[in-house]
Length: 478
Image (cartoon, rainbow, N blue to C red; front, side, top):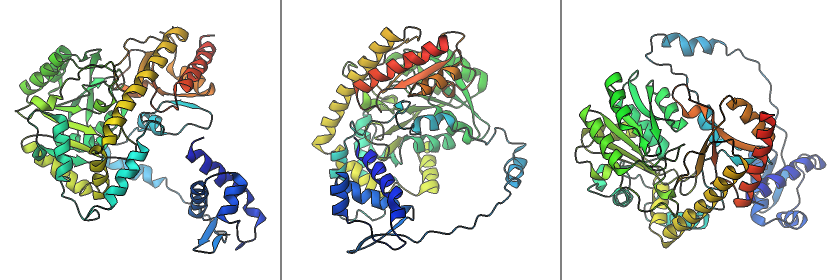
């Protein structure tokens, strides 16, 4: 059982027992709770901390934990209906709506109910994260001189140098800004490159978080279809001609959600086409550290061979480590770099130095290479397990492409089957999947679902999830 589950269960047990104690009454000692519930001292400490945060318990150093005085809250019923007018009355002339639909993002961030197998997420299961290495890196970072000092606004020089080496080519630390993860970097980039109301070209389908960023910035996403070799150059050229867009955003490696790998020839075509239209290519290189064992040599980032500054490169450590290690990078050349820097400084000043120091300690340790190799091997095995199970047990679902990297499979539903009906049946069967609709900037050609395999506990859970999916499909298909 995961530590977090033990903490939640112990906190519930202690919460249920609080009525046995009078206000101010002392709870059993930590040692007694360890023995009674057969859990670790760390679990006891975290469970008590949770009750303290809820205002149910107070702790006194050296004395123990006591039942807190109940908090008395006087309920007031207000009327917030005025906000509907305030939030919309001044937007009638906006070039694009400012209301943001975050449902596609939340679908991959929400924690499913207990007992539901989570195939919807995009982060590594705790068992795949380098938690020991991160803890050691955090400890070493905490002992670095000046760790709580203000960092350079562009980021620590050593970390910028590391990201520059990872990108390769002629990219240097002077071209790199450290960011608070990839999502923040994309937000900064779109604000820098496109004015409200402007069109931006996006892959179709694409990551829902990107569509949400664009719409929140008042931009108009224009879809450009992809195939297993990535975004289609002939359609990209037509889209530039039709819209006058000055930005295209693409994911060259293991595209989310299709898993497509942009071929080197197409990559050069994309940069050439964008340059001919006086446009930028935003390269979201989110999955480079999630290559599978059979991926072969990976194409270099588009930014590695870009003397004219067409490409704005985005990368992050988050996907390969933990949702909470939100450290990434922006790389660009020319005047656009100064605009990116200015927006980032205004928005957030800088990425906290302790987090940057931790990232630097992690990627500089021998544990980093071992972790990436272990993740590659396990993701490969999980992909093979899931793909084989889908092909054998769910033949009605089309699996057009099996990726050689990333953490998900993209499945097309049979014609005439409603996506919402499948999603409801799947959840009743005890599985959470990502709905396909949020991945499309316009009307989708068919219903889809995305199955992630990085967030489950192992291959046995994948097998059980597919069994439940079969039950759900039988229900929908009748």
